[in-house]
Length: 115
Length: 116
Image 1 (cartoon, rainbow over the protein chains, first blue to last red):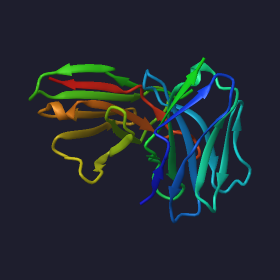
Image 2 (cartoon, rainbow over the protein chains, first blue to last red; image 1 turned 45 degrees about the vertical axis):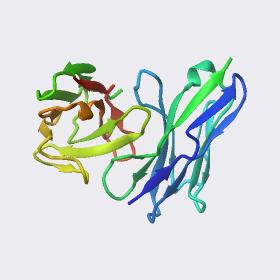
Image 3 (cartoon, rainbow over the protein chains, first blue to last red; image 1 turned 180 degrees about the horizontal axis):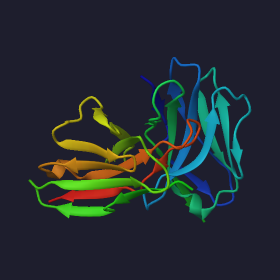
Image 4 (cartoon, helix red, strand yellow; image 1 turned 120 degrees about the horizontal axis):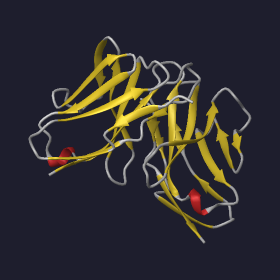
């Protein structure tokens, strides 16, 4: 079974600064997908960014980018120019490319943005 | 874009009663629906997977008789919490796969269940 670990329960960043959220995972599979989801107080799950394991290039979406280190099984999220609206819970998630579409989530990181 | 509509968004019920949560795929067919539970300040844990036309698959430790899942059609999956108790109070979220395997999952907005 795959596991996803987020070692930072809480992180804080000053508005306009950059913050990096950590995520590691454990799998024996060679092909999979990795995701970062944002969950604001409304508790809606919002997809922030995704990465296919077979792609070497790190995914980017505007102010959000990832550092995908396949050998190290690491998948960190960098948020640049942090905004107050970025404050939320962030979940790292794993999805196998072989069996099923379900996501395995990490424990989450609560991001606080200071004005 | 594809939308999963989940109802109710919140519900309060008395201990011993049953509560039904519905998830509908509005503009696509969902042959599979994933049901997650999220306790306060915790992550999402997969409870079960429903499949249209067949029995649901439950994760280890999830009581099948307490959490009844039915996938009645290609657009509707339901989770019924039977004989609810205060410890069943939680946030329940459904999600459905996209049209293609590469598509991201589509999440409902969740249901906050409080059992008094």
